[in-house]
Length: 144
Length: 144
DNA sequence: TATAAATAGGATAAATTTATCCGAAATAAA
DNA sequence: TTTATTTCGGATAAATTTATCCTATTTATA
Image (cartoon, rainbow over the protein chains, first blue to last red):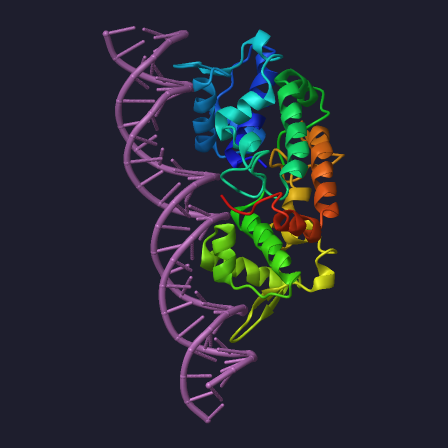
C-alpha cells in the first residue's frame, strides 16, 4: 500500500506528535528506537517532512523534532503520505495503465475507484492527534 | 497497491481469457504487445500462473497460453493476486508492523481493516469473465 | 569564544524489484 | 526423424527502493 519510507514517516510523525503534546523534542535516535526503524533512513524521511512544513526541526545542541501543538489536530494522514509517496496512491491506475479514467478505463477502474475513494477519505479525515492519543493511552502501538 | 508483476499478471490473464472464449491460444509475444508489457518478464509471470493452475500452457510448436473455458467465470482476481504477490495485501499491516492485530493494533489498524476488507471482497467477487467481456465489448482497455 | 550536541545533506552501499538473455526441453508438422 | 516453433528455467543485468556513512552546518552552553 505505502512505501517503507511512508510507513516510517507516519509512525515517526505519530511519535513526535505524542511527545509534542508535552512540549518534548525528540531525536532521530529516539524516534527510530521507539518506532523500530533504521535511524539514518528515518532521519532522511524526517527531513522531507520538515521541508513540507509538517514537522519542525530545531537544529543544534538540544535540538530535535517537534510538531506545533495546535497543528497536531489539523495535520491529516494524507499530508504525510503525499509528502513522502506523492499522489500516486490516488491517481495511479490499479492495473498500471498510464491513462486510466472514465473515458479510457482499465477493466477494474470502477471497482478500484470505490476503494481508492474510501482510502482517500480515510486519509483525509484522520488526524495526527487521534492517532497520538491512541499511543498515549496504550490502545495502539508503534513497533513490533 | 499491487506490484508491477501483479499488474501485468492481471492484464495478461484478462487478455488470455478474452482469446480463450474463442478457443484461441496466445503467445507471450502477442500478450506483451497487447497489454504493453516487457515480454520476457511477462513470460515469467505467466509461468507462475501456470504453476498455480490458473492458466494452461501448451508447449511446443503452435503452443501458447489458454484458460479453460469453464474456468474463466470461476477464476477470481484474488487468485491471480495471491499467486503473484502472496497474501501480504490482506495480512500486512498498513504501517508495516510485524505484529498488528486486534490485540496489538497499529494506530490505524481499524481504519485500514475497513478498506482492506472491502478490497478483499472486491478481489474475491470479481471474476475473469466479466473483465474479459469488458475488453471484448470495448468498454475497457488493457494498454496505454 | 570554544566546545559539544544536534540536524542537513551528499555519497555510497545493500536489498529488492523489474527486466533481459540464452540454452534446454517439448511438440506439431514436414 | 528432422526441423521449426514454442514454453521453461537459470543466469544475469538494470532500475528502484531501502539503508548506511561521513562531513558540514547550526546552536546552546560552559
